[in-house]
Image (cartoon, rainbow, N blue to C red):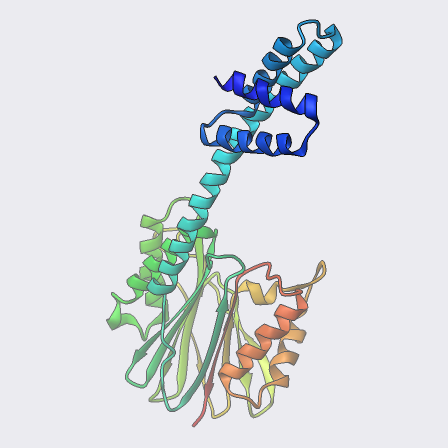
Length: 330
């Protein structure tokens, strides 16, 4: 009956050439869509209607209609695959949004409120899921700080970060020993993370009693130490293999004594590998920007530095960006 209805609509339009007939054709299309009639089936209905209305249809016209039918069959298959892929993408987008919200909840950390330390932190994901991670641990007036970067992105990276955070929380007796913390975490990562996924990490611990900052690194970007007395920066060079490569790995530990005004500056490679066009920026540029805002609070400094590099990249981050500053106040 679909053929008869369409044939009548077509016949009416060919005879009257009336716009009303076109409106009825539009209604027919919508009803066909509701009945899940495919585009190639519509074309076949049109061919059958034309053959009924014009039995002596020229051969060239018949062939052209057959050509159109074959084209629409291929189109219908491709369109169906596109719609299925589109629906899958929407499902995946929703799942990623849920995972990103879970990541924010699971990896949420609070900046410690310590009288002697001014702390600022900013961490911005280049995409929905953040491959960077930072975490603060407060022990009375002492502060532990971890900064990590997963070599790999997306949901697996977020799961790795969650594992690192909760592993950290299970070692309260070792927080003041960065080399021990990294050794323990390396075992966790090596045993539980799939091959090919590694984690770089910096862990430091500020001791309020003697104002010392002890730290160790597992292949992470070296931090910077700002000496307020000389108004100068130096790299906090460290050695250590990334987490998850070898089971029995030991890490070296280093120390700095912080005087009033001194700063510890930690970051991920999203800072050092920031680019202006196709050129990586120089470390001196990072230091110049920090110096420009050094009279401000630690949080204001990291916020201004981030906004500077955001503008530098035309508000399109190419990598996750994490920057942390700890400054001794008194």
